[in-house]
Amino acid sequence: MKIQLKNHTFQIDPGQNKLHWKHINSGDWEPNTFAIFDKFINEKSTVLDIGSWSGVLTLYAAKTAKEVHALDPDPVCFSELETNISLNPAIAEKIKTYKTAISNTKKTVRLSAREAYGASSSSILERKRDTENSLELETISLFDFLEKEQIKQVDFIKMDVEGAEFKILPTIGKALEKLKYPTLFVSFHYSFLNEQLYHKNIPSVFLNKLLIRLENTFGFSLFKKKIRKEIANLYDDVKAYTYIYKTNGTQISFEDLQRKPELIKETDLVFTNVEWNTSAPLRVTEK
Image (cartoon, rainbow, N blue to C red; front, side, top):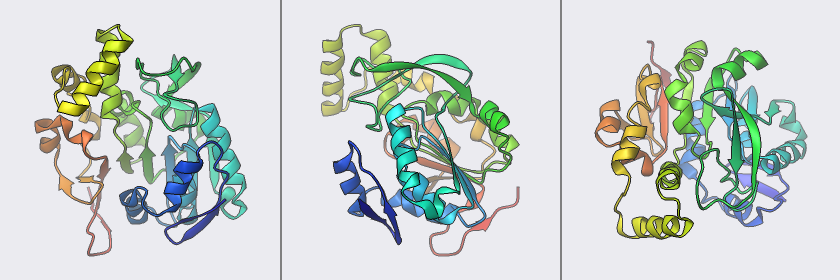
């Protein structure tokens, strides 16, 4: 299948995700994400794509970047990722792949599928609504991964890890310092964290589904205080960044995040030391 991402054309095998790839090919899928990649990645960039899924953003980054490191622990995603890279030989040599799960530490965990592996929703957070599909895997911290693979330069990190960001971010400081604070683009899965709290506090699968459905319908939050406690220190290790942006380019502050932690329900975030000025070329801010 041939797809068009902005000005770039790729060959992909859609596998079990034909409808998803059709939506991606429509041009309506996550336009702000492509804008962020265009803003912060150039021909000298080394990109770390944590949570690559089947490779849509890995391939897009590789069209511009010098090198891309692509990670995904989901066995189906990883297989599709490698297939789609091989279908694009002009950029394949730029990409290195790792069937690796990043978390806060080295630990044996279970990766559970919401519907099936490969559907871009497998998570190491326990959730009642997951199917019985789960597998055991070993996680590794970002710092230890960089040391193990001897990766010394990264200019842009994309993190889309289906809830594991709540484990990674509070302990990411050592890795970011090692890399001299590359631009960090994080996709937040607030609902997955919420579901994990339901899983921990309400044993009944039926009540889990019912209460989450009511919460989504009427907007109340049964575990609002618990979630606030969970994410109270979420941003401590990224406070060295000069700028925080929503995906639409709107600048916010750490104070905004402390005042309204639920902001991450509405938007993913970019942490960077590069000013994002939509009407002018990017410039690096000296620290």
